[in-house]
Amino acid sequence: MGPFFQPLHLEMLGNAVALSEEIISDSFGLTTDYWLKNPFEVKTLRDEAQEDLPKGVYAHLKKYGNNWWEKFCGRDTRCLYKIIVLDPRVLETTRGEPPVMMPFFLYIMTHELIHMVRFARFECAATIKDKTEEEKRVHLLTEKVLEKVKIPNLDLVIDFFNGKKIKLCMN
Image 1 (cartoon, rainbow, N blue to C red):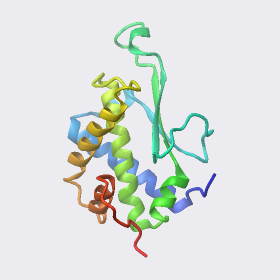
Image 2: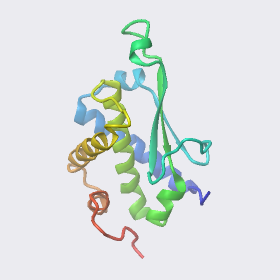
Image 3: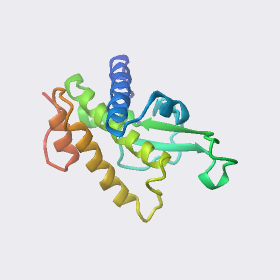
Image 4: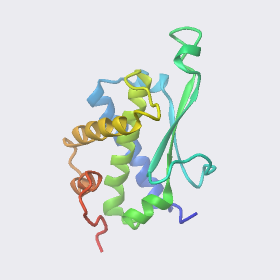
């Protein structure tokens, strides 16, 4: 296990969560009511047991609750989404530098919230077989949603996630 986020990093993560939620709401026409019916929480690796987390990712989305075919009625929205951000992996990539961490967090959170919206709207079924295809779709949607957002270094982060061999660290 590697290093964990410091208070400044956690503050930036919180700001990125709030901004991502706003961006997703605007882009997908979601209301406050939507978020109340589809609650989510964000945890870090420090908060979570490390079982069952995929390798090579910066965050992982989990859904807790009944599957749609197990629900009692259409109003049965008993589920919770949890986004686990992997501190060591993010810190290794960004070196913990604030000018890079905020846009990096924004990308990660926007990406995970798009997954969440697609799951909640039944726009995808995350089977092992189609995970790669779903990741491609969500990456393209994330890039499209974030192209309107103007924050420093976001373009570098998008280039990084597009596979360009660039150095995200400022030093």
